[in-house]
Image (cartoon, rainbow, N blue to C red; front, side, top):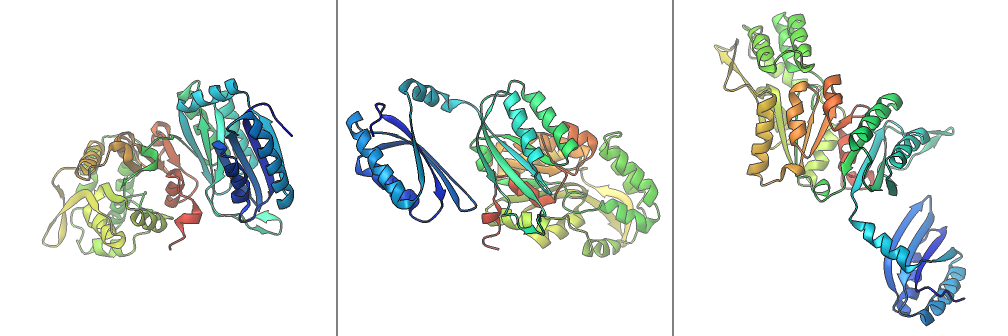
Length: 410
């Protein structure tokens, strides 16, 4: 069997087993063929292997193909050959500089409808899906029903969207409609080398607002909660709301802070997220409009590198209703993020920021990857990425981690 063209695509499928790829490529090596591209995937012990190769001369092509056919018969696999015209190959090579993006879809479960909706939007935008892979673990079945706690699929996409803003808006609409999260990131060097993550604290690393806990002891819970919610929605200035709320805490015994800290409800997934990030060399910071006492408690608990938050004034063992130093508001959070990145010699594109309130938006926008976590509506509308369906460890999938190596050293 001889094909006249020297560029040939081999497509192989069959039962996956050790040594199969080695056996096929050894045939190509025997005739000094040049591999121009190669891709392999295995799903449920079924292998798909594609190799694009160029033979030294046309006379060698027949020998290579005969060798491959014999090897395929020996291995009991299917093999097909497709000749590729040189001008088509040249056109394909010329496309390698086109923009590449990563689309990550995440939720408590991923259905065919989720995947179809994202794939359709990619098509509408004139882009092409190069690769799809599952980042979460294999899905067990119980009584015929898939049992999962979270699921994540990552698309590698090539091309330039016809309207990027429209595409991101559509993804936001789909995430609300179908109850899953979507991340749309440029696939570049920075995306693969994040080094610093900055967290808001209240309602992000922990499930509560500590000022509300303090207010409960002061008997002013309702008043403080109303001011907090208004500030988080962006209806009033954070600094003003902070002063008003702290003033209401006057007279609270300082020992109450230790009691609150000892029972802080940690956000779901925080332990797993921080453990993996520390293991992989991330610097971790808390930048909070809350209080430094609780931030330092979390620093000791998790081994966090930096904590910047507000300091409550204490006189004779009681809160005075005043604070010490500058207020850590939206502007200050963004400044601190830049400062830490500068001190650590980290490019801002390598920084991740995570928060839920309006006072987090500036730092979310400064960071290379800003994630609105279970956020207020205003924050969701203005953030580039958001997680609303799973815990904090969902961030790991937006960073490209797979379960297979997230948990391998735990």
